[in-house]
Image (cartoon, rainbow over all chains, first blue to last red; front, side, top):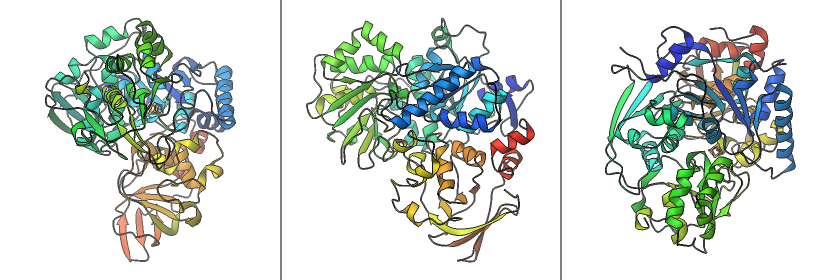
Length: 417
Length: 169
Ligand code: SF4
């Protein structure tokens, strides 16, 4: 039997053929920590007796989750990260640079065929550019910083063949939410997911990131796609080193293959408090909302802001709603300014916050009040996720969030296109 | 931790898909590295009295997919600092599972159906068995990969790496 993408990548790193189920120790090509996980990693590094990071050029620390700092405790942890980065010569993306999962590919740290770890669960994002990237904890990150390596169990793979042509008003976020609903929150636990088919082929690289980002919402260890011409074009000017894209063999040995025809898919909304509570927007239309969020590592890229701006152009955010926009990176914000996208959003009534995680994880920038309903482009709607356990979070595409912000209630974006 | 150690305590029962935001909310975890301070908020959003009720040595018992969500290592740490000696679940989300073992908190995969709140349990990691002393039933523990058993036996990844200098498979 042939190999999956994951098996190909691990085999290339190990210098021998390895198969799903095998335990391997391998080089990690790039590693990342954010401000919620790096301070513990720094402590773990010291506890390990670490003096030098094995290869500082393969490490980045990102201050994005609570940036700029809302509290002295957070400020002290940020200072600890800066001191460690300076001491070790590792790269640091400080306040305002953006969300780790937007920055790493944008800044050229990730290439097809790489093995990447991040002390953040949505590290699966870079699977969209054919990297085996997965989330780990702080101590694993510390171990990898010290030794340059980590142990892995090569995962079996679930292949998702996504056929059909997405309708107007239906985006990659709708695909990701639909798949979370179909596969459920633990349907892909311990598995790598491979996405393929016409739907993936037709999407831009930015849109693909949204899907791989949410692979972890099905429990997956990685969310892999093949590198095609679009991928290679996107990487140009970003990644300068040579890379080895990994394609699956036609007779690859998959744990499971599922086919979905998404030609009839309509915009999706995940209802509180589970990501796999996805349903067609028609079923929740009319639910009043008080806050709308566009941004995060799932949907804070230029295309996402553009879609929202198209809907908001010539319209106004409902006076009942606060629309918060958090661009996923400084580059995204600058591009949005260059193209007049930021201006259109602000004119319509949006409040921009610093590029970064924004209000996604409840640290700052838009904690809802008791009983409020929020519609967000983020990837998680757990109770308390945005800082208040008495609020309700609905997940949707940037188009659906923008349309809902205008109407003051959950709204099918196709009415406003 | 001794490989053959036998743990005893009472069960605190939770359902499926307990995520790491529920274990320790993001609104607290970014502020401090003081795990004793964070431990008072353990499970707060789904069981506000948990910290007040839990006794040293007790177990968290859950259904499937325990620890899904973020990669925060604070999750197994606050559970440990709350005095919990092991988490038993039908299945675990993979990052939590790995983090728990790395931090020396036994994550015990076994059939948890039938265990009720307050049941007295005995977890025998060496023999791979969980006994429900209240109900007289037993469940088998899914064995850990050898490298994880070694890490757990050392009390966590830090001690393991200090001893071995690298990963040994
Ligand atoms: S945007 Fe949200 S999901 Fe993404 S890394 Fe930040 S906190 Fe995590």
